[in-house]
Length: 260
Figure 1 (cartoon, rainbow, N blue to C red):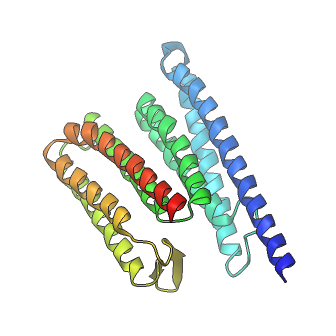
Figure 2 (tube, rainbow, N blue to C red):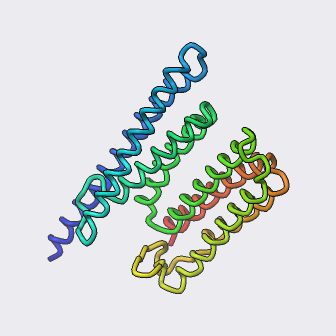
Figure 3 (cartoon, rainbow, N blue to C red):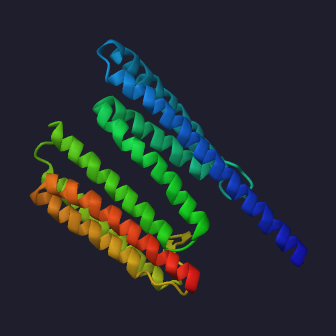
């Protein structure tokens, strides 16, 4: 029995390592592609090449979203743990590709700069999940999401598309932070498991406190409040603050992992 369990654990670890390798390769390919797109968008003579590439990326992403949604529907009730690219992850990546392509079409070089940070950040967050397997994963992922939204909202205001939307954008960030904090508190009542209807997700270990993750939610609420008053201050200090908080949480969870 122990031999079978050890074999199953080893296969699971190998599959996780293969998935991480796949995601790193995908991120690297995307970053190389972004380098060429950035050079094209910065050159007047190659702007048509950039627009053509983005247009094809949008249609490709739409097709991938459709295929991924079909895979998710077809895999309901089945064991997908042995798949290199699970249906849920495939749907997430395809939706991310679609949103990134649309953002590229709207904001050109600004979108490329965001993706330069977002894509490696997603790989790091996934690596965190493999190493820590505790509350740092949802906290780090949430901070990355909040920082990306903060940047996007600022770009939308700067380009004049939603010039009078300071209040709605700030409220979205504040409500997102409050919702995350409340979900973390709810998890503590169920031994770290988030239950929404029939869905269950292990966010924290049973003996783990959710206070650091709640702190991340509160920080995003504060950034949202500042955004209502001054988007430029919120972006400048908010991005630095959320980044510093992520580093501080990393140090905290590393200490917990090593000495507890």
